[in-house]
Length: 502
Ligand code: AMP
Ligand code: ZN
Image (cartoon, rainbow, N blue to C red; front, side, top):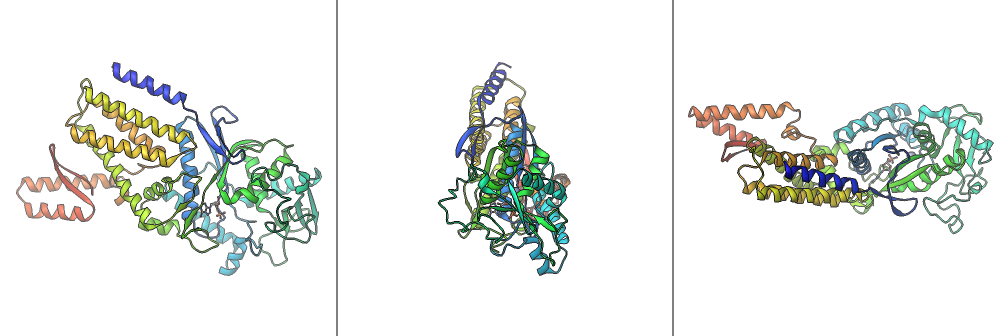
């Protein structure tokens, strides 16, 4: 068909022309995204420290990277996604104690027991949020030998020194230290943002290996005595091991820029002879509550588990994506409620398209339909353009809602639509929603759970129709009322009664 081919060509041309640009924290600029290997992307995102429940702050960061992965795949890249589990070495800022060990002592459990519980719960929560699992989730404690080897090599190369069973990275050996965070070391009051330690040559040096006190339970043998690794060496080693000495994207929330990511760069580049460790550094903004960062350590958090009791996974996702990933988000119940309502609007459009598909016509498209097809393509183009500009989800969502409005308006006016156009519009709309991780639920699955729910509702609906035909209005009305209570409404349409989500 002439019209369709024309559109396909136009669309292919648009996709080809569009280049993806990302904001690189390293350069502080938007850059064209060109991975190291043609169509393959190596991605490392710092994983959680598993000593407590995952909260909405975590959800914000991991949903953002989930959408980044989905968009890269949409653009035809294959992504190898590594996200570690921090199960040792992440110290508290105030008392410099291992967060996991501290909590395990408070709860009188084995540190690894605590880790196992919260790691499993973390996966359950992120699964419930429809966040795709990373390809691998390496645990820091599974890489002790690699870390010890790397620290030995850093000592040999003159980048690190050992004092009393502690090993520190000698920051003075690097002339470009601070290039990611742009921290002006000399201008800073030394010690104010660095851990103070009597064995350090210089306040800004950081620990690669820490000597364990005799009572410390989480410790390993090393050439420098028993101890445990520093948090920064963990991610550097797991990144190098699974993604190579140079890879494409490294991410995390913006609190990790300094010192965590800065120190990862220092160690990795010292080890690999100054090969640039990562090509693009991507950082998410914080999710805040009452103006403060939501954090386990501040105790002001709402767990993912609690949030999912009140809101659907996709409403949480929509709330997160309504703000650009680099900006801060303020959590409020109202915004979550608003997201739930907006989500319903998108699902209603999807359902209307599904319903109209059943009565579509196999004929040439008329002028109105052609115009509609053009508008849809235009809005699709706007969505793609927004996502290509540093994954601008709020703008992409604006295009998706505009598209939803355009479809509703069109379907309200038309009784029968050209089948090919309808199929194409349906595919576009659902494909764009899915690129953001939405539209994962089929009709009632969202509310009732399980694919079978749709068929059960249909069965109930059909039974009610039978009762009506037989004149049993009492029972049929009761079924209708009970369905309404469950959020399922029956509507009279030109093609007869139909059910949909309220
Ligand atoms: P943690 O469990 O503290 O090691 O954090 C795991 C990841 O979640 C890191 O990238 C953190 O920066 C990120 N994160 C923690 N809290 C928030 C928050 N409130 N907003 C956004 N990201 C966060
Ligand atoms: Zn990390």
